[in-house]
Image 1: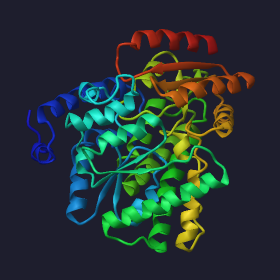
Image 2: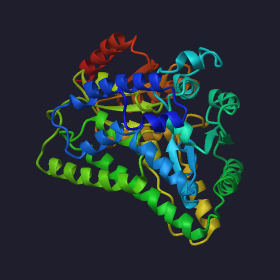
Image 3: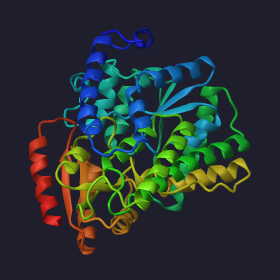
Image 4: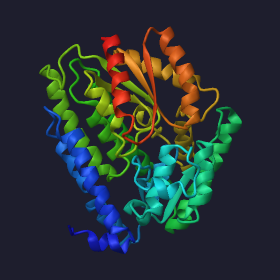
Length: 424
């Protein structure tokens, strides 16, 4: 079936037949997991629209921005400072993919025991399925794991790639390294865009991104209510969309949704009955359309009330200090905020353990589901310490390791149902 965007996708060199097949499968998947929910907020209609147009209208907007002389920069990680990109009047979009489409193509150049996230973004490129990658003037990688670090060496054969070195510890020398990397990235962005980043532009960008974080923090706080006013699936979707959508439009739309949520909380209304087991997700990020585990959890008699991940609180917990007037002061503020991120790439990583326990207590959870992608060594290994910290705090944890396939759905559902019954 032809669409109004076929000519645009063809110009971007997508495989139109394969892409149409992907959109058809994702549309059905989305309908089953999201649109089938009862009692959804009216504000979620905006997110539904964004997802329905994520490869259409949003790509059209990116191409219009490029026609106006702006650049599009794609990223895979919350460490890449969006403030720098926006200060150069460029657009930043997330490129992580959460589907098996393109897996066969990826495994021709990557080991089979590579994590699903890496195989997915490589496979989407090789199979000509992702209009976001094809719209980018620059793709920014980072060294948060060995798999990504080496995959970028191959990926740069197909797209222009720039890699930022992420420190592995948090001593003074590591902060100095990261500050150097942020300055180097600033120079690269200025080179690609042809625009100078001034203190005024950087200050405006900091406030813009902070506003989005504040709105997501507000959303996070509202989920502490019992009964829970919004499903974990819907909040995951909101956080995922934040990496694609225009930041001003997104912040305004989610702000209105939070207004609706506040009314629901005041009225004592929820998406599940009071006393429904409250679970928190912890671990690896979940990229669109990786909704498998949240769907299993929330169709097993529980509700998700928080996400300790890059698609969740790890990305929104800390703001960049806004009171700097000089470029160097603002760069320092961006650097300091980044160094508070508690990714499993860091060693030691006591901060993450403390944050998980504090978050679980704050949200009054009955248990934590630790999610790890198969072959993701940092999170799989750190799960041992996470479980110990939670056990010491009297909070049960279920450790799940899976990929993007549907082959283990029944096995996972059996394990999740048993865990829910235990915490009930």
